Image: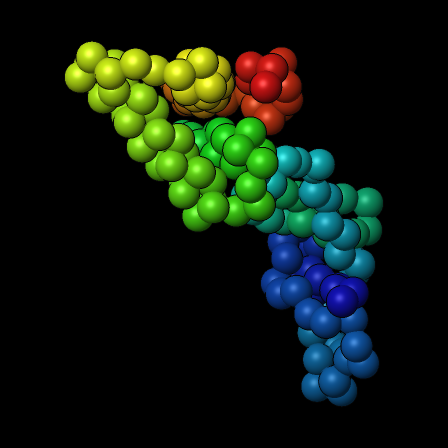
Length: 171
């Protein structure tokens, strides 16, 4: 929607911002209407937001100037946690968090059963040893993602490219 601004007689203050539609007859004589232009910087909506606008009168137009601000550190941390969660779900080969959690719980229960066999002095088969090794690797990979997330969460500010692979372990 196009906007116009009504300036005071000295043309140094904005009186109102109006839709660029037809001007009602009773407002024609109320002052000069000039175009309004939005000036918005590029920003990453995950960790940044726009504040404003601040109105500036410049060369026969009004600029609505927005500034880029960082989201709160708590919001930034939540984005990092979300990225860690996404990577863990991907690691499990599942499509959603619920299925991922089920896979992790099943892995923990299976590892516990193999550990219980060992603790009870029962023989562990070669297949169970291979399975236990795979479960350990799975656990180490998940823990590495959590450590990377924890390291990013204590950074202030959190890097805008926090989702880049350079901050995360190779899965």
